[in-house]
Structure formats: C-alpha cells, structure tokens
Length: 315
Length: 234
Image (cartoon, rainbow over all chains, first blue to last red; front, side):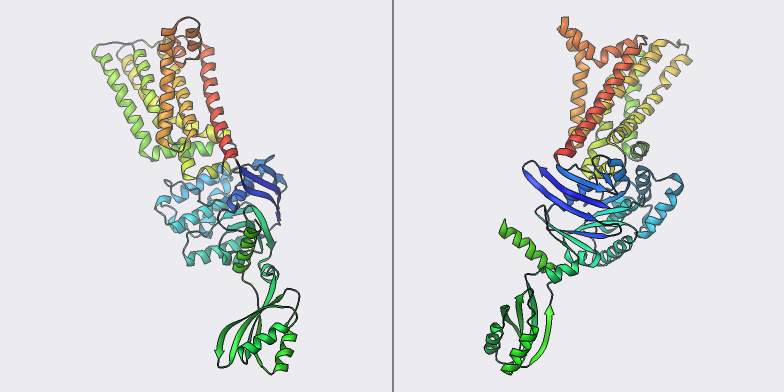
C-alpha cells in the first residue's frame, strides 16, 4: 500500500531524514514514534507530497509521489501537526470547500460531509466559525477534513495533541475504527497512544529507523535482558549472594521489603536464558521459600528510552 | 481550481475587505468624476486615467493576503496536498482577486452611463479606455499576487507590491526623461504606454497580447516561488 525506499531529506547541511525504508500494508495502523525533532513530520510531509524528498521514493497504491502526485494525493487524507483550518469559515463551509478541493462528486458531497461530521461528532457545531471552536474541536474538524473524499490512506500527525483525556480516548477509538477501512499512519511522541492504537510501530530517532515491530514484540524482545520480579523470604544479603551464583544472572537488586523477612528483588538475566527453574532450585536448596515470581516485561516507555539513549551513546 | 476561486471570492465578500476597498475606490473615482458634471465635460477617459492611478493603492491591499495568509496559517499544506496542481491554485486565487476588481470596475460604468444619458456620445475611445483599464488592473493584480507569494507577512506584501507598481508607473516618466534608445526600451516594457493607446481609442491586438503575457509571466513566477520554497524548506 505504502512503500518507502531510501528516503532522505536534507535541509541544507542538516539531515532531517536519513535513508528511511519501510512499508505499510493495506488496512494496517502503523505507529510512527519518536522524540520531538526526530523527522516524523518531515517524513509525513514527504509522503503526502507537501515537500519533495532529497532522495528515495515513496509509492502509495503503486503510484510514485514524484511522478504521479495527483493520483497519490487523491488517495491520501492528511492531518498535519497544525490542522490546516480557515478560521473565518464555518465548519460546514470549510468542509464543503475541502470536498470541492478533493473533487468529491456533487451527488455524494452533502451526504459525505454529513457522515464525516457525525463520525467525528461535530454535527452540533456545523454552523460555528472555526475560530470560535476550542482546540479539541478544531482538531476534530482537522480530522474531518482528512476523512473527506474517503481516502484509502490516512496520515495523521499527532492527532491527539492538545486534547483532554476524554477526547483522547474518543479519538483513539475513532482511529481504531477507521483502521478497519483505511490504511493509517499515525505519528506520536506519546507511547501509550501508540501501543493502544497501532498494530505495528516504527521507532524513529534522529531521522533514522531505530526499530520496527509490533508493540508486544518490542516489549518482549527488545530489552537486552529479561527480567523477573521475585519475592523471597530470607535474609537479604544471603539471598542476593545465592542468586548471583546462578548461571546467566546479570544483575540483582532488592526492590522493597514487603513483610518481615520478605523482600522483593528485581533479577535481570541474559535474554535467552530462563533462570526461573535454577532460581527455584537454588532457593529451595538454601531454604528460602519463593513467595512470588513473575516476569517483568519492559514497557514501551523503557524500550523507547533505551533505544533513544543507546543511539545517543553510539553517536 | 474553481473550488479555490469560489472560496476566495466568498472570503473577500464575507470579510469587510472587499466592501472597504470597493467603497474607497468608488469614493475616490466619484471625487474625480463630479467636476465633469459641473463643467459639463463629456470626456470620461481622463477619469479612467486617474482610476488607473488609484489602482496603485487599491491593488496591493486587495492581493496582500491571497497567498501570504495561507502560508502564515498553515493552510498551504491543505492546498498543496490536495489533488490540484500549483498553477491551478495560483490561478484560482488570481481570478478571485480579478473578480473583485471587475465588480469594482462594473460599478463605475454608472459614470459614463450618466454622461451618455445627458447626451454625451458613446465612443470607441470609451470602450478602449475601459478595456485598457481592465487589462492594466489585471496586470497590477498579477504583480500583487506575486508579491503575496514572497512573504507570509501581509504588510510586507503590500509594501513590495506597492513599490513594484510604483516603479512600473514611473517607468513612463523616466523613459520620457531619458530619450533615445533607453526610452524606447523602457517604453516597450511600460504597462502605461500601451494603456495610453487604449485611452486614445486605438484597439489593437498586440497590446492585449502584451498584457496577457505580462500576467502569465507573473503567475508563472508565483508558481516558481512556491515550488522553490517547497524544495528548500519544510
């Protein structure tokens, strides 16, 4: 559906995007994640044809954005970081203008605007001027704008920015529902958002792809170690000493004393070694009962931070 | 293109700007027209010449926001990512400004109608004068649209287009002073020297072609400016 090959964008000396490669399948919701200034918006601007790339190709539904911009633009609905709204127009006039701009046939125009307004819940505000709307409603009008023309691909740049928590949940739900009929690329620097909505995540940092996977796999695989949280009854120093002797253990740290003589520990081991059994036997041998044992998967936040900081260390 | 044209026309007439400009224009032309009635002069072409001069002040304000505003508000993204090519966008906006100008001009038809009602003859000079005036206005607007594409600040756009138009206006005087070859070259470029022909009632094809080419060049330059900016920045 969307194919991005060797995409590079230079602003003078600054390389905003370096050699990006990824594809998005039909009907997929792809999360585009990265810290501010990582090149998310630049990439989206290139995909939608707002700015040209320095090198590389972008193909949407088989059409190249440089060779056939019109065919690509017909198939994309774009919500940029700042919704492109005309403040002096009413909501309905604005959407009607967008429909004309996207060459929506006269016959379906009215019903389509009505449907889109209902979908993003702005029907009650249709006769208000955009400048009198709150940030949340402006964002919805922006989203409505992207949906007009029923494009196959939706590109949403930080769609929940500036919304209150209730609105954020609503918009996320809406995006998930849209994902059933559209291919969606969504950018965000908020991690829970991406893990809540997206099926696949591209993490981008300093213009380069740092990781591509499902949110679950990223949590599962990405950490360099696997972690256990374990509560053991017994004197702290002795328990730590016994755990350290187990093969594969990299790191032990007492976390908190839960009850008298019971302490919980965080144990990190090499990624491919399962230390749960050896841990059990070692503790049984030493006479310290294990009261609780559970694997801790790294949250997306931690992975993200790890990836981003690792990059920094390398760079 | 028609979507952009109608949207721009609406935004002219939904905001006070079109009414203020049209009102001001009519007021100023009336001031120059009423002596014709007092002194019972049937000549309207002199007034047309003055109207051309008034355009120097009206057009920069008319066109100042046409592209600068889109850039400032970020709505440029919407236009560029829609399936309309850049020339279509610029042309739609240009025609919207031209439309307001034509409305303005149409209102001034009332003056020659008054003169004719009082017995002045209907002459080719009058038709020529108006044709020239409209072509002159169309050319001025293309300069204004171009100036608006250069900046996102509307005040800067006004200043650029006013200064450019003023220079074009005085080219004629400069060519008169210079004489010889320089004068010939300047005269050829001058928007005004061709306008004078029209005002004398000389209707030729070549000045029409000249004005249309002038407009095309500025529309082309405007497209290039926007295109260039797309390549150089985000």
